[in-house]
Amino acid sequence: MITIVFYSLTGQTRRFMKKLSYDKTLELKRNKENPDVDNDFILIVPTYEDGLGFIDDFLDRNRHYFKGVIGSGNRNFGPEFCHVARRLSKTYQVPVLYEYEFNGTDEDVEKVKGIIENES
Image (spheres, rainbow, N blue to C red):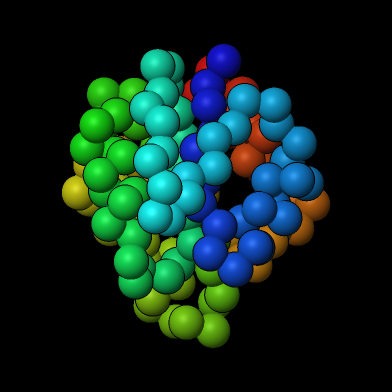
């Protein structure tokens, strides 16, 4: 079973995770010691870049399990929409699996469930 690792800056990603209601999750916390994983995972991150070095630290330690990234954000950001997911995709050579806006629609939840099932 794949793990969903996520970070929620404003609470939108956490709300999406509640709608997803997936059992095997790990929420990364800023200024905390985040545990390593011991199995494959997908990362869900917001658009904001500021202060996310702890995510790179986590990924550097766990890159061999990192299978893909999902981005969340606000389409009003234009080309910056899901910027962090795209940067991490390039840096760690993993695919951007999906992008959604705010805390996601029911359709977004179903699509991400399908992605999880496909990656498991």
